[in-house]
Image 1: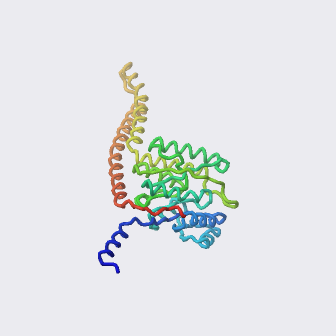
Image 2: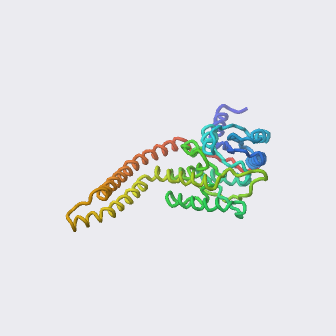
Image 3: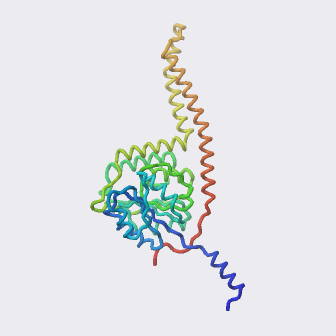
Length: 331
């Protein structure tokens, strides 16, 4: 018969042992009846201990009933747009590891254990599924846009990912619960990457096959409309996260234009002793004042941005880092 001391030691050892991670697979969906069943079943097979959540975004087809029949937990988000769905998922779901994937069956579910294992073993906050494809399944406009937008972001915030717009990612709880989702649509992918880069989080990348959509499934991404929205989001993030550089550049441009306009004024004054009237002299003076104001705004906003970044970092550090030893990959 076990003694009380033995029982207490056993309980202590049990409580000290790392627990198995709670894994949530997050699938934002809009009209994916042709592929959602396979996505749910594939991820349940790849991650047997995970719970698969399908968040329907006002689908007009049978996405909801098919996902539920396949074994997913189905919830709804009425605000249209992937960013709105991600905001709701991150707020509602409690887990230790979050796997986010599109519901169009273009990503390989068998790579999910690799992404999760990398996140846990290397104690990362985000692992990106970098797409590897023969390019036949990837539209030329999307390829060009992905390279262009990824290059723009990496030039400003640093190069730590090869595929910024991938819809296949794994996150830690720390990342999810400290991420202030602002985007409403497909520009959410850009916001996720910039947040990780700005917070200097430990991130990684795993190459994953990218395949064509299932027959009957149609892409919801518009090359030009969503491309411009992502470009606009990048501009906003640069302004908000790099205000000194943004307003400093504007100040420099305004100052140079002001000087160019003022040169004829000084030449006229030197030759004739007269100062030209409006608009030349006034315009040069106005642009000079705007240049000074832009520089002042940059200095002030840079201080505000630093304080906001420190607050986000403190919120991130409030969430304890998990410690797991149970393998993710099934036997």
